[in-house]
Every structure is written in structure tokens, then in C-alpha cells.
Image (tube, rainbow, N blue to C red; front, side, top):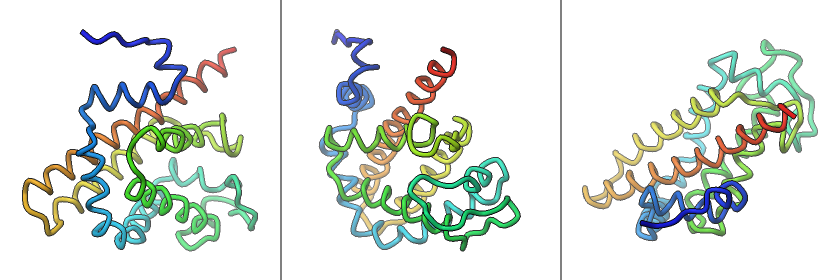
Length: 197
């Protein structure tokens, strides 16, 4: 039986990543499978981003998080939900961030070097990083990750690959997104503990 230091899981994000990867079974072969489909998914990133933002803007509970000024955005912000649209400059700014996120997942080796990025993606949606006005509830992040997962897996199922390669890519992405989801939820626990003090 392997010993896991539970306190270290909370304090050391690389240790946490290795534990998750080991437990879930995210192997170097899975990391290679993710990168192997970049040639197909890379050109689809703009379409995937547009679909994601159509979904986010279809619900007031998710759209409302794009009204306050986004960290790093210097243009004019929307005045309210009614003035928010897929073509608003602040939405375009956020779309660029999502496109970079997807490109990073496809283009970087899925190992300990990716951990700080996965961790920051989780942290930036809480008041612990980015704009203090942006505090996306965990239910909205879970909804977004579920939508992204389904959309990506649907695209992967349609790739012109042999069935074993396709199956490996689908399983690899599923594992990677579960790891990402953990690096999101951990910051909600931290934010909750901080607000309780």
C-alpha cells in the first residue's frame, strides 16, 4: 500500500498532481495522446471557444461574471447584462484567454511543469487571484467544466483516427479534465476557509 502525505497534498501542488495522476491513471501515454490530437483540435479552438461563450452567455448566473472588469482588461466594461454580447470587447478578451487555455492543454507536456498553470486556472476564478470582484460559484465552474468536457469528447469521437487511438485520446482528456477540476475545487475550499476567518 502506497503512503500519501495528506498534509502535503494540500501544501504542495506538484505532489498533489502526481498523486492525482497516479490514482486516476494519467500516464505518459495519456499525455502523449493529448498532444497527438493537437493537429486536429488546434484549428477547432475558435469554434470551441465560440460555443463555450454562447453557453456561458445563455444563462444569467454565468453571464453576470462578465459584467465586472476582468483582470487585465483595460477597455470599457458592460454596464449591465443587457449590454453584454458575444461581440463585446470584454467577452473577446475572455475568449482569448479560453483559446490560450485550450492551446496550452494541447501544446504543453502534461507533467509537473503544467501544474502551476492548472493551479492558477482554478485560483483565478475565486477572490484569491485576479479581480477581487470576480467570485464565480463552484456550481458555475462545475457546469463549465462539464460543458467543456462533453464538447471536447464529442469532437474527439469524430476524429479520423483508428478506434484504439481515438479511445486512448478520449480517456486521456477525461483524466486530464478531472485533474484540472481538482485544481479548481481546491481553491474553493481555500477561499471558504479564508472567508470563515
